[in-house]
Image 1: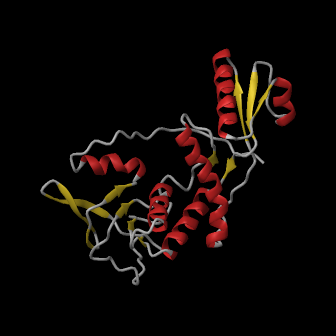
Image 2: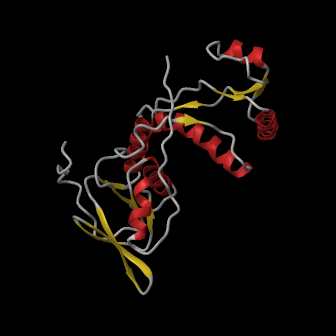
Length: 242
């Protein structure tokens, strides 16, 4: 399918209760959960194809511990969801519960890992503090001459971001949501200072609720409407081994 090829059956609706702009993992997840919560026929518009932006090459690391209890509960739900999605949709997510290992190379970092361990205990998440020998036993490839300790969470893991996005898209469609690929949002329409629609290159969708989920493109799109979104793209690296 080329960028200009479109499914002739996917007609642009004249109105929608909610319009999501951006078909990466955030946009599709939002669409899925809106449909799951009973929002009638939410619509997502994506200028290319689902997960074609920054989502497809994400590392897909699934961690559960966050700074607050609320964020941690949300992350725990996410880990469960990756398993439940496969059952619900029949679409594999590539979820592997292979655990995560964090290393401390300084006293400050070691103290942080101890705090994380305490937080994990309060949240009912199994975790282990390790000495250098324990780190070597768990992951022999690591040089531990300067390692003060480690923090292991066995229930963490990783997913295939593309597969997860496709599973959520399938689940959203099954609940009545509509996904319009190869459909560019060109402008958010307003009336008396309030949102009244989304203009696309295929027509206008009347709506009072719009969610911007364009990733690194969101700030530019928002700026064109006089809205500042504090997002900045930054390079980061990861290594995939056997």
